[in-house]
Image 1 (cartoon, rainbow, N blue to C red):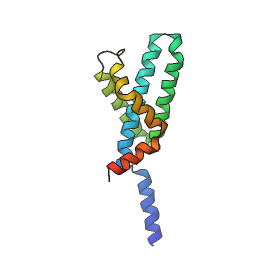
Image 2 (cartoon, rainbow, N blue to C red; image 1 turned 90 degrees about the horizontal axis):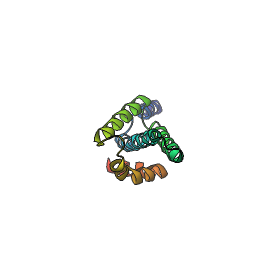
Image 3 (cartoon, rainbow, N blue to C red; image 1 turned 90 degrees about the vertical axis):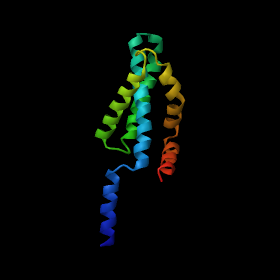
Image 4 (tube, rainbow, N blue to C red; image 1 turned 135 degrees about the vertical axis):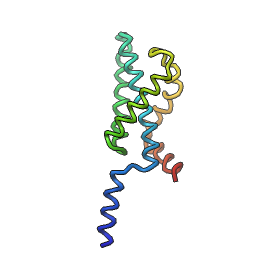
Length: 128
């Protein structure tokens, strides 16, 4: 009887993201939004010499979204990503002035994607 409760509890837990995972995903999706915006801006520049940079940014965005989907349902990930992207776009003076976003996200996002477990561990401790 006890083992059945543990199994059903684990199944429920697997579908429900913890507070730490939700906070972690918010940061991951902030990065995904930043990378998407930067990639789109570079693509709109029509500067062939920047194509490789734009592609790397696009891949980083996809990597962040894939990471987020490990911790939350796809629908939640898409919803948060859209919200984050719109908030970042709204914060820009115009869609070509990315300096503010770069200053805020470039290094933290690079670190997060390089060592996601380290950042998740932070959120686990912060939400205890």
